[in-house]
Length: 272
Image (cartoon, rainbow, N blue to C red; front, side, top):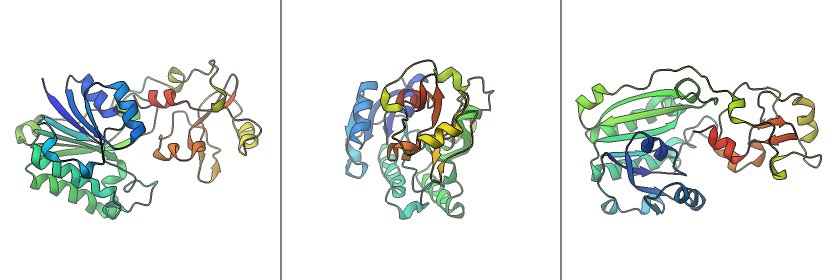
C-alpha cells in the first residue's frame, strides 16, 4: 500500500482524490477548527489540529507521498499578491522543512494559477530550486477543472509533482484535456426548495438588482467587488476563499422558488 501525509488538509479535498487513487492517507494536519471538524466527519485517519509551524517533524510518520495545497491568498491575483512577504506565503518552507525530515518519494503541491507568474516568476523559481536542493526532480503545469476534471467550474490551478527518482519523474505525465460533459443542471437542482437562509428577500440591499438582472432559470451569476455582476456564466466562476468571509460573494441562481445563493453541498459538488 502506498501511504501519504497531508498538509494544509482543509476538509480533505486532495485527501479524497488520493484515496480514490488507492493511496492511503495515514496522517494529516490542519489548523482551522471548523475545517478539522468536517475533516473528521469525512476521514478516520489521524488528524493533528495545530498551526503547521508548531508541528514537530519528528512526530510525523514516514510515508511515500507528502502532499498539500499550501495557502494561496498571498499569490492569488484576487489578493494582495505579497507572496513570501505574507506569512501565509512563507508556509511553503514548512513543507520543505517537513520533506527534508520525511524524505518522501513524491511531493505533490497545489496552488493558484498565478503562482508561476508571481513576482516575475521569482517566487516559483524559489520553490523549484528549494525542491531541487532537497534532491527532487519536478514536473509542473497549470490545469483547469473545466478542461481536465470534467467539472463545470472555471478553476485553474498550478500543480507541482516532485520525485526523488528521476526515472519516476520521467514516467509521470500531467493529465491530458478531457471533454466537459457535466453541466450546471447536472449539479444544481432548481426544482428543490432549500432553507430560507439561502434566498434573497426584499430586505436585502441586492434584491432589486438581482431580481432585474436574473430573469431566467439558466446559468449562474455572482456579486463581485463592484456590485451585482451583469454577466451570466454558463459554468460556475471560480469558487473563492472570500466566499467564507463575504457572504454575498457566493454564486447566485434563480430557481423555482426565487433567487438564492448556492448551498454548501452545491459548492462541494462543484469542487468534486
